[in-house]
Image (cartoon, rainbow, N blue to C red):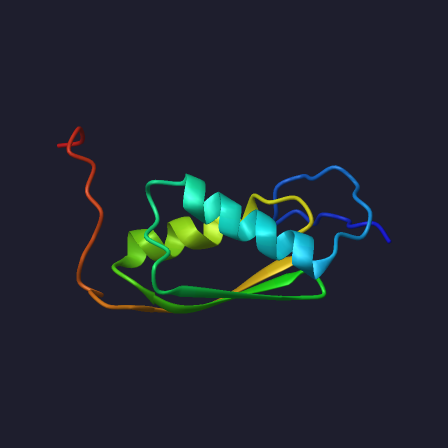
Length: 98
């Protein structure tokens, strides 16, 4: 089984089937090694290559970063984010931009 990318996603190399257990380990490892996402309240489930994110994140930036991190992992077919935002009014600001 090979994954074909569409124009909405970044191009990926063809891959063979990756088990859900392996994907779960990759997702957790990616979250642990990234300082930008607080994954304390994020629960991950994987089924047939689809990664489900449940739980809470602090703001929209954290939400986007968590989703983008998972999308960057080879073998992930799709990301379904059901993350809730605790501070919906918070916006990430780059202090270098004025």
